[in-house]
Length: 116
Image: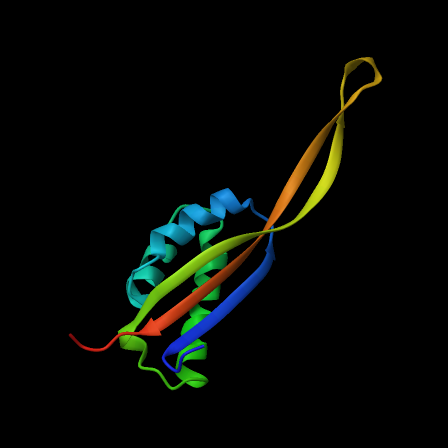
């Protein structure tokens, strides 16, 4: 990892990767402050967890890497698939249907951009 990067990970989030990626794609490329504002007022249920992860990445940038928090940009926000809880639902005639409850992983990478 480069010196001007900071990272935060959140694993085993109880939401499907497809739904989480909608929020992650929205904040990709934003400044850290703008992304926090977006996540604060977003109506998606998972946005609170993403906001906490972004706050952790900002804290890592400030405390561990000594970066200026006013110049941070979300360079990467990517989602991975986690485990799946496998359940079943009883159906007619003694049959069963499978239900999968997916989990996700989220990684946020912040980079300090120079003043242009």
